[in-house]
Structures are given as structure tokens and as C-alpha cells.
Length: 318
Image 1: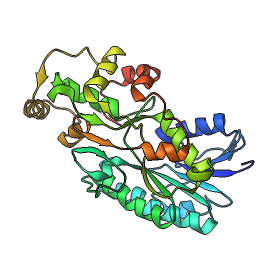
Image 2 (image 1 turned 120 degrees about the vertical axis):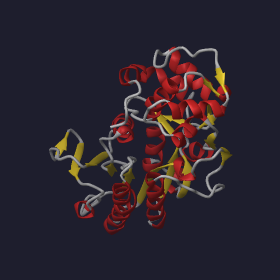
Image 3 (image 1 turned 90 degrees about the vertical axis):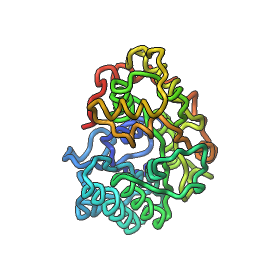
Image 4 (image 1 turned 135 degrees about the vertical axis):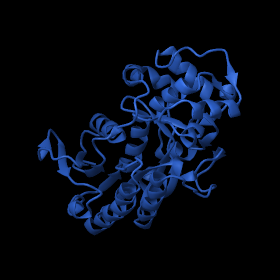
């Protein structure tokens, strides 16, 4: 593995930053090439930096030159449908074309279980559900997956990602709880979550590992194998001072939706359903192929990010 060149797109993002930290700790002999939209010095330590933007396919020319591995982590998840298409669909296709032109041998691409649509979903394996995305972000990310698979790459669909740097999941829970100050329909909803550092371990194992991990292709789910129940997550967040202690009230789903609609906020009904209802997917296969232990789970990791979450509260993602 000495001197292996690894291109990491989205390197300055939430997941990309965690991957770079893990690679530096676990694979010191690997030389990452950090690709981001911002201009930076040519080298910082052992990390080479390249300015490129998936929304500008011409800027991608040469980013994979001489590389052995591509970790494709960049995406746009905002409401701008044109930018979703430009980055997640057209941009990913251009990146895959560049990787193939440069002879990259290994491609690992991060996608999302949001491509499956509104649910409810209970324990499906990868390949058992027909994707039915309902937003420009998830629809364009599904389109981007097709380019990765055509290039012989591995697509990892992650559930909800927690940890320091999370600007969406826990802020969304905080906004929803402010508007619906009760337990949501018993808090029984199960969802797939993963701590960002555990996701980084999994991504690095598939990108840099040997054997089954190095040969994996197709689509796998990439989150902790055990789903998290909503009431357990909300209780854990309250215990860390991220959310107020929950009241005794338990509202049926219809009342929850009424309260959400009646109180201004940024979380939509669709997003609320994703957070509060059943959306979990089996992920045992990914950890088995990667040959690593998934660890105790995202609830046990929350303490490391508690200060980050307390500072942000229910801030709208920026």
C-alpha cells in the first residue's frame, strides 16, 4: 500500500473530513489527494489539494491522474434542483468518466438511503427495494449512482449520519421537537443511523482494504446494523443537554402532523416522517465484507458531538 494515491472528493465536507482523519491515523502510508471547490496550497503536509467543482466538469480534468483509488464523497443536498442535477448527476458522471480515463482501479461512492423514498421501510436488504426518490437531491443522487455502477464502482447508501459537523439530522430533530413538543406516536419509529467516524472507517476499508472489501461492487447499505428507535435517540439527546427533557405527553401521529403544520419552522412534513417513522435498512453485509466491527452504535458516540449540537440548536442548514 506504500505510496498509494487516493483521490477524495468532498474532502472538506462533514464525511470527507472524517475520512481524511481516519486515513491519516490508520493508513499513514497513503497519500490522499483532497479535491474541493476552494483554492488551496498545492500541498499541506502529506495531503495534496486540488481545486475542482463537480458542477464544472471541465475543472475535473486531471484530478484522477495517477490515482489508484477514488473516494467519491461530494454531493449537493439543498433545494436548488438545477444544482442537484449539475453536481449529483452530471458532475458525478463527469467524475466517473475522468476516473476511467485515468485508469483508476477502485471507486467507492457515498450515496443515501433517501433514494428509497418516503417509506415506511422495515429491514430491507440492498436490492430488495425499488428506489422512489421524491426530492431533487435524492433523485439526482440516484442518477449519479448509475454512473458509478457503470464504471464498476461500489455504491454505499448511508442512513442518517450523526457526529460533530452534522448540520442536518439533529438540528432537524430539534426544530421538529420545538414544534411538536411531545413523544411522537410512541417514539416507536426505527431508523438507520451511523456515527460519522464509523462511516469513515467503513468507507476507508472498502477503498483501501484487500480481499472481499477490495473486490466489492454494486450497492450496499452503509450504517450501523442495529436501527435506532426514535424515543431512545430523543432521550439520549436530552441526556446530553441537546434537547429539553421530554414531557410525559405522547401524541398520536395525526396530532403530531397538525402541530408541525401549525408552527413555523424549516423541517418539512416529508423530512419529519423520515426522522420519526420506520426507515431502516439492513447493513450487516457491508461490515462483514469490510471485515471490521461496526462498534457499539451511534447512541454511544453522541457524547463526542454533544457540544457541537448544543451550540447549533435548530439552526437551518447552511
